[in-house]
Structures are given as structure tokens and as C-alpha cells.
Length: 218
Image 1 (cartoon, rainbow, N blue to C red):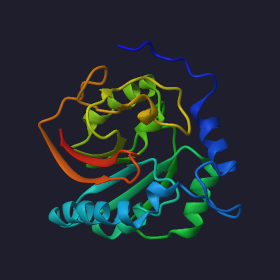
Image 2: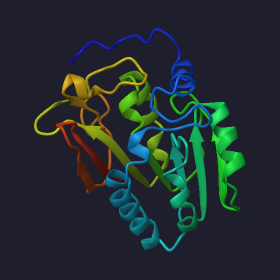
Image 3: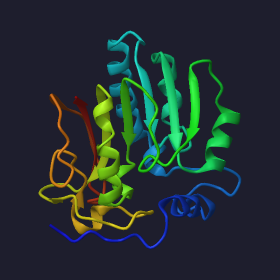
């Protein structure tokens, strides 16, 4: 197993820098959470898959979105839930979301999901978030996931065979360049679950891996 890397400065500062410097794209006037949250090829099948799951529960689930970003994804789910709690680490982003998206069952919270206590909910959505975090931070999050019934996890993974869970310094980059990706069922995370169901998987062009979603029932 690769030696864990000590991050040189807090993840919160890194995420602020990503948005301030527009490292994921977008214009100078607004927040933008990257192509993975806006490319119709990637998000349309994902939206359909998650909405089908939420509808199957007759809008009875309280959902917590860990790493909601610019909310271009989460805004499609709120009407299919009893309550939707959208969480991100960047204060200005959360304030922007509060101003733009207003629904009776929608709540935004600014939290560091690796350090802070997480909201009570039935279902957790974690979409392309863990791929940016160090193994230590992911471990801290995994320890809290047993409080939930469902986890909808989406990660950017290499195509073909790859080594799971190589450590990285938290930030803009992901494990893809190391031919690695996050798998919560593998060491060192070893998530305990009753059922694992593979959802939509979108293979990207130009050998850029795939976006894969898994539904865990705990």
C-alpha cells in the first residue's frame, strides 16, 4: 500500500482557491463546478438514474448531498425528496446557492465533510468528491456513513485494470494520472454494506476514463 501523503495546507483553502482561480473553468462572474457537472453526455444518464431511484421511494427520502458544488446537479433532485440538504465546504458558494435556489424542502449548509458532523438523512449523494480528497479524509468520511441507509457514490475511474485507492494530496487533481481511483469497498476504506448495485457508467472520450455510479445499501 502506498504511503499516505500529508497535505501541505487545509482542503478548505484548496477548494476556495479552485473556485477563486476558476481552475475548473467557468467565467469570472459565477461559480462553476467543472465539466463533470455540466456535460450533458455525463449528467443526463446520471440524472435519469438517480431520479428513478428517488421516485421508487415516493419522495419519502431525506437526501444529503455532500459536495453539492454549483448545484447544477442537485437542483434536479429536490422535488423527488422529502428534504434535500446540500453541503459544500466553500462559504461563498453556499451563499450563492442560497440566493439562487429557494424551495421549501431545500437547505444549504457549509461544512467540511471530513471533519464536521454530517446532517441526519436517509440517503447520501457523493458525486465526484472523494476523488479529490486524500485517503485520510476519505477514511474520516467513511466512518460516518454507517448512519445512512443508502449511498449514491459517483467517481471518475480509469478504464480497464487499475490500482485502487492510491493516496493523493487533496485538491484539483484526481488519481487518474496514477492509474488509480477510489473504491470504498477496498483497503483502506473497507466500507461495510448489505448490497452494492452498479448504476450508470459513462465512458469518456480520448482515454479519459469513465464516470461510474454505485448504489450502496447499508
